[in-house]
Image (cartoon, rainbow, N blue to C red; front, side, top):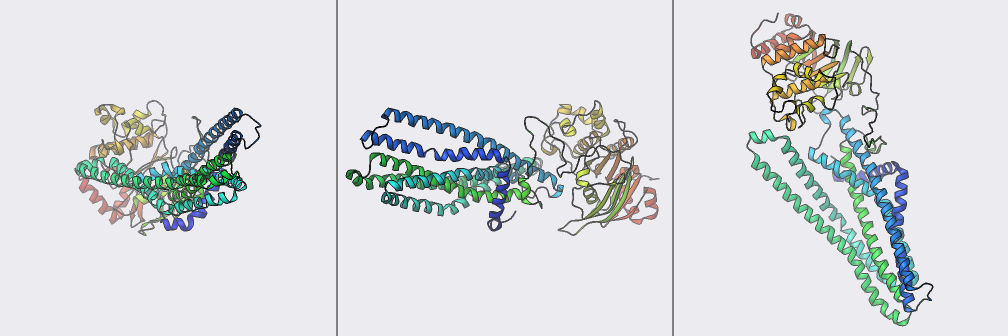
Length: 614
């Protein structure tokens, strides 16, 4: 994340540009809301004038055009009218806030999902969640305060002009100290902002610590670290409590200074107007008007100070939200995006504007000149080329660090490739937009499960024809495990599958992949946590699916593995070394002509048990 100095240097221009983008979204609704917000700030001027008229009529200073009770009734009507204006302003503001904050969160989430998987989150999860919750609130508050503050400033100017026409000397004597007190309070707001930022950071640390503890329950229990983790959360909570109390105390101090200035001004009016009232140049109604407008202007000064503070918060909030977009321009945050409410489904999207393709059975996948270099280490894969024919099982093998996983991730668009030509049945495709159901399904080295039931983790919200779920569980060699579970398919697996073994997690992920009905199954060391018997059964079931799947389609498999069972089942083996394809062909061909393959196979045999390959 950029430093606060960077934010100060460039955030101001960016903030106004992004606020303009937010303003353009639902512009008509914002204009109507702004009208009522400005009217809401202007209506308090009317009761002050009516009050002045009321007291002047009572004291005989003004000829009675209306009876005092009629004036009181008029004051009540104005008050009821202001209530209606406030209700309209608040209702429209809530509606506008809902749309704008939904748009911001939608674009943030799209940016996260659209990034390569290895760089999607650069911040701790707790901080990201805190940002999704709080940052749109902060930036929308600034947008709302534009008409609110403009109305407050204009109303304050009108109030001061009215009072100046009544008594220029008294106006200057009263509002001079008031302006100085407000300016003094605002000059200290920079220090208050630091405290506000510290409390937000303390809150993010607590959220992050709790989220990380929930995600590492097993590691905490194995290390018997429950007490240290609890103590750490307590310590962070105490730091947050102190930061929040400091922030609240300073906010109350600032508020008391600004509101107290109105009380001081009223006292000055009372003292300074006494002689003028005795002389008859200053009426009781004038005093009531001064007292009313002093409080009004002081309140509006608070609003103006609040707006300046919120602008500083918005700059930081926009900076935090932009970090979730990776390298995308920050203007993407305010891109007009469709929102679907009231259960109305929208068209399926890919996240980048590419059209969603219809299913196209795989005949030939051609990959040429695939280059993907990790920017920090300079390592990666270079000029990788291979073909995968429909119905084949192709295994990418090689020593640790040879680039097997990088090839799969770069092919699927999970890593940014510097160069690649990927053809699906002779037509070039964009990996990030194309790969995914119904074209492909992917299972990584460490599959991620959600904390819900087994069937939810497999289906992921899909509706599948009868029998396909059971077939996927059977082919993933997970059927017996389900029968042994207390609640069967409704067994809750816990966060990240913590209640399952490593092999069970892999087989749940395999069933999820199989039930997707994808043409191409991409697997990264899928059977690494399985015993030999289960592994052999899994590859046998996958081989059968390549001939004929339950849905009546043959599937194609592209996998990385050094395991003997996988290599024996492969139609073609691609051997990697130092980020390049060293050789490719059938297992028999590679064992015959490649010393690297023979050494790799010998290592696989030593761990899996000796057995003739041919």
